Length: 214
Image (cartoon, rainbow, N blue to C red):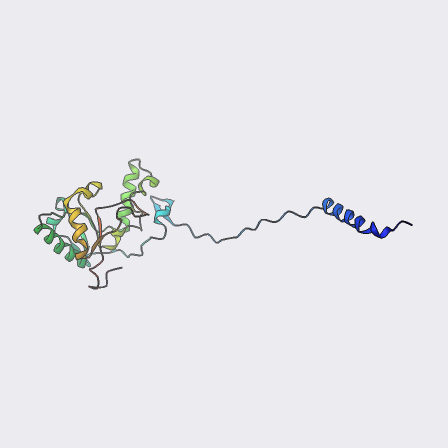
């Protein structure tokens, strides 16, 4: 008599393997995490809305429009072309002291720009875009409306307001002494977000001497 018990396990093994191959397992479902996307930041210029580039995301300033007062005029002798330029009084007073100290060292500090409102910053874009510049090109070098530190009333651009300023005695003097009067570069060389602006300096107060420092 043939002992069937020897073949029963083999039989079930064959049947089992056949079933697996005949009925493949369903493909694994790809797991996707759904993340809430942050709202896009935009600016409107001349009736057209533009997305804010990544370099400026999260840097919009909640600064109310300023008037005179509290804005005060920088002495025209300290400005380029005897211009009418305004900043906050505390920043103006510190600037005057700093310019006097620089002058004693044989260095002239001349201001090219001060307070700019949101409206004025938007006007800069409109005028340049009328000349053929694109928003995408301009925003690489100019803060979009609502993102410029000039809205704070504590920022000045020194003359010449371009890359040449980094090669002047004025810049070398500011690098050494600006902090003594509460001024610092907002966009120094090799910062990770914005092009270097050696001429752009913001007043934040000397350490421990007031509440304007942020």
